[in-house]
Amino acid sequence: MRILIFIIFTFISVSIFSIEQNKIDSLNEVIENSNNSTKFNSYIELAKIYYYSNSYTEAINTIKQALNLTGIDKIRIARANNFLGLIYYHIGDHPTALTYHLISLELREETHDEKLIAVAQNSIAVVYTALNNPEKSNYYLNKALKVEVKNNNTENIAMIYNNISNNFALQGKHKKALEYLLKSEAIIDDTNLDKALLLINIGKEYFALDSLNKAKYYYFTAIDYCERTNNDYYLALAYQYIGNLFLKLKDYKQSLFFLNSGLNISEKINALEVSKDCYKGLINIYSIKQQSDSITKYNKKYFAINDSIFNNKTADKIAEFQIKYELEKKEKEIGKLTIKNQLADRKQKITIAISVLSILILLIIILIIINKKRKDFADKIAVKHNIKLIKYEDEIDKTINANKILETQKDTNSTLSEEFKTMLEFSISKKIRKDKLYLKNDFSLNELAKLLETNRRYVSLVINEKFGQNFSSFINEFRIKEAMRLMSNPEYDKFTIESISKKVGFNSISAFNGAFKKVTGVTPSTFAKSVKK
Image (cartoon, rainbow, N blue to C red; front, side, top):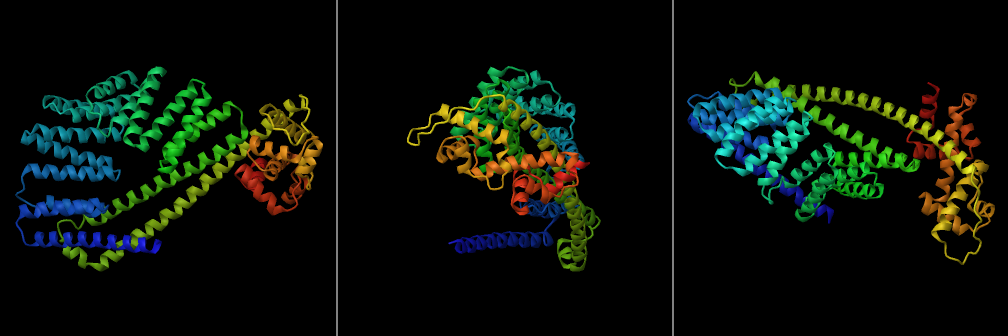
């Protein structure tokens, strides 16, 4: 079945590629045999094909060839410059994008077409926002707004209100940001795809202004809207924001529910940033509740997803660098060579390909070095966290040792009450911590049950339910924490890792290494080196 799907997918991909190639060949033929006006239109159509197939270098070069033609009217030249601005904005070259959008605006102002002028002004505003210049952005947005209000174009008015609000939010002017969002809400259509984001943004601004009840209302309204429209991304985002709101209200039960709901959806749709923020919220909750195991669990996931986001951004930067590099190489040839001659010049293409490949290899090496440094930094953070965890465990030991052990239940046929489970959980923890039973390499579940004067099944059940582990993992975690204490103690500096592993109850160094990495997130050698620095 999988082979059949692969064959069908390959066939469709080849068919689409063949159709696009036929269009390119057809347009190139028109370019060779037509007047400048028709050539210009064909170049723009060709650029669109390149743009939508992510061939940005070819798209830019093709538009520039069109702009070199004479006898073209200002409206079409303005649109071509606007197209160039859009492509440069897409690849992250905002200063160049701004240059082409300003050229487009100047040409459109000469035509006195208000609607086209408003489009150019809005494009310029978006670029200024990306350049972190909200004042300039709002200047152009307000100019565009006057035109859209005059023409009663409610959809564009709502979009401009949203953009103005975003600029005020970047400046920390939350009341002004909220004012424009509420204006947008008053006119936006319920079928507008941006409605969900608008509701979430209104909630964010109320949250920033500490109007938590109003923020809650808009977050819940957004959730309802997303559920009706099956918008999973914004639903996950709304869950994340309302989870953090309940965290601020110290309603940890509600906060956990919504953060976990947001996390479940964001992981399904691979929304990494939303997942990252959900993990951050969960870490904050468990830190307040002092649940060290949960803190460790979500810290590991947080660092893992943070690395994924960093790698994705680095890959985007490499792609952007590659595009800019190719543009610099090919720009010198614009106006001298036709598309046909460029395709024929295989030697030059091979040279460019080798140069690009060399740069990519260099960048990959740099990326590997950066990732190594990031890993070392993450290991240091993990070690510091685990050292704090040991101190926290020591405090728990003191607290537990000050309390009495329960009277255990011996009747194996009776049903365990929640009260008894909680009491047995406490007794297990105290007995193991106080007597350091985990240091015995042959310590068993039966032996623990015998010491607690209860049966094996009860102990196993409580360890599984209350500690979320099987007996082996539960004991190994105590052993690893003891190993960390010894490694942090200067008196054990001369001990080998293997001798420490045996001292804390492990029979083999491989089992110790695996358990250490699982509990702490780093290897024993990395931990030992870090604490000795």
